[in-house]
Image (tube, rainbow, N blue to C red; front, side, top):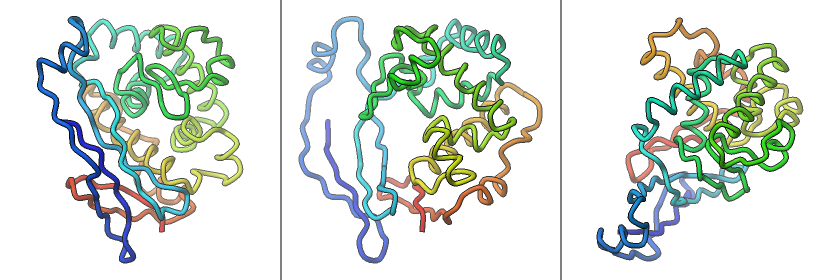
Length: 235
């Protein structure tokens, strides 16, 4: 079943969802449409808002299950992280937030591949084919290394800049007051905490919640959606 929904905030600040249409497609038809070597897509709902936080829209995008990150792929990513001196758990956390290991992912803004490189960033870090996993991860990790050096290993600012660009972080002297970027930093932080726990890495030192709150220039308010998920928006 495929459903298109629109979410919005009413005058009291509560999320309301309107279903526009629903289309049912049986599994055999899905498999036939996908092709013999493809898996049926898993769909997740993403809530985005404009910079004022007044409008929230629900979007349907394809996602890859975490277990689709094979042992071979994990070893490749880990080796690239080591090569560039970036914490492997951070690289995996960014990849999970960007594409969930989907090497063919394309965003509405034109970001491509596993680490969602826009064309300018791909060129900047020597990526010719952003859909090639090795090239894409090398480019994304080079960018992370650059940002960590630029912000002197300040993880929140480096992560925010990966999403919004260095210009926005420099302009606001910290995490910009963009809902998407603030949500992104929290999502990567949560991914990083879980990744470090899984890999039994060193105690986390760069992303305490209080530091994130101090970095943000607008208060973040949690909203519970009709799907039971928690979303964040600025006041």
